[in-house]
Length: 179
Image (cartoon, helix red, strand yellow):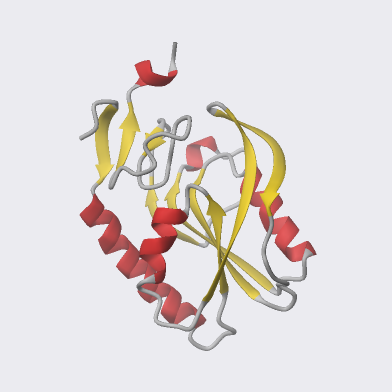
């Protein structure tokens, strides 16, 4: 365990097992529908998306968006598009991949934007859901794990761009981010 991590919430093995289950669920869900474009929200979703798509038994397309709404540890709600999609999504199903649903501010704006771009359907899949922090009504359609209200790192989640490469999800020690 990393020295800045207080506790491991989900091991790599638990995450991999859950990604297999979610991949099977996506395969079943989209079996008789138009296959989705799987859209990852950079940077945090990359490890989860990489593991998830290995277990979706459909011919999917992938794309990425980079959106920002955080300053330090707080979501400010002002969503900036840093990198947009590389293709049109008119009349397409979108499976939006997120690392964590926290306040919901970013996802609500991104989901609205995707519909404005002509998506026929937008579903959200997230590795982690933190409902206790929700301020904007947005719910993930598919959830890996629910988490408590604490600062979470690893498997894509960061603090000041560090810890994304940890192979597990853990709780960051408070003394690291509270000065």
